[in-house]
Image 1 (tube, helix red, strand yellow):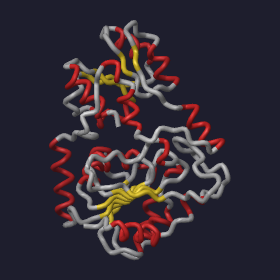
Image 2 (cartoon, rainbow, N blue to C red; image 1 turned 60 degrees about the vertical axis):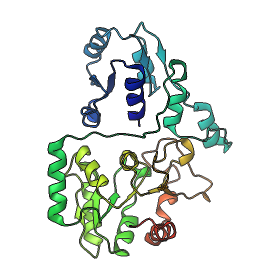
Image 3 (tube, rainbow, N blue to C red; image 1 turned 90 degrees about the vertical axis):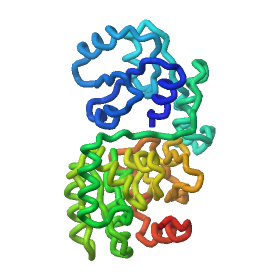
Length: 316
């Protein structure tokens, strides 16, 4: 989600842009032409601190605004700008159900924080850059399967259990539909994917734990529809303006983390259990349901997704 800011800072300020991220996200940024140098956060704090200090930056933009990023700020002598995270407003919504949150996306909130340096949103949306070798390899696989542009991606992973599509929901949807299915997720979802395949009554293209983040991004880009939880792959799908059904668990769109689309003809569809008094219970996800029922996800059935798709004419 930071890619619009990276592009606009680079193009509008004509500046040299460096970017700091965790090492596991390197592949998502290493081919971005708007980044002049990529710095990777590892456990070697002293080494990273010396590396960043030696760059003698003239400005630091903090798009994370966490304890870790605020700690990082202390090593710089240059100005630092950030954005309003609306921490109090999020707490009020979660605990008191009082909504004082802004009615816009996190990306829009990023740009409000940049108004003093006169960087504005160019409206071009998010970007994800992929190397040619990776692209050719995945496209060749899709051609061999004869499913390119005709399949639905079901994303079964997520940072937290309370943001993942349940096994039962995935199976029910698959067994009630006929289009080709591609399962996508990380290595930690391998066993989950095997259960989905075992109890599905038709062929599934199980690509969970096999492909990298960038390879999975191509699988998403070449699909006709993406069904996902509130995950990073949801944002990948939005970067490609894909047709998206997002099944929300512990989180909610009101926190500004919904698909950021730039195509006015495509509206992302949300499945939210608003009738639950305990929903939402987190702004970014929980490892487990505090009430141990996870009804926000488990109440849905395959027909709910199908009815939403049919009502909105999502399919090609």
